[in-house]
Image (tube, rainbow, N blue to C red; front, side):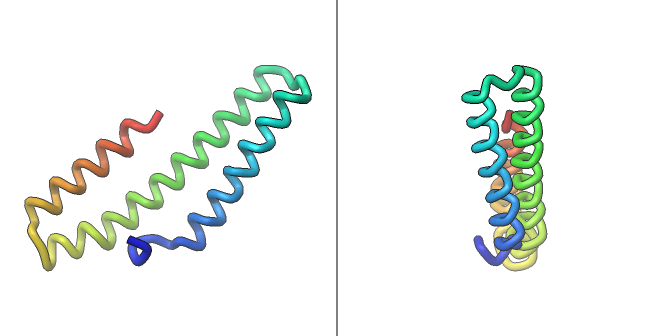
Length: 91
């Protein structure tokens, strides 16, 4: 699985997201206005969504391509469909 994604890029992005979530936690303790907290929550959600896009793109470029070229095409399509469904259901 590691071979199908840029793990350094993903780790860097996830560390930023962790920092965003920690900042949100501090904002709650500091009695920051709700609108500002919600804005930061939305930013963290967007960043996490982008991480999902990168993982899905890597899955397509490596796992799906390899499965179609060297494996069971029907199973590859079924697995890809499942991955897209899981990603699409992220809220």
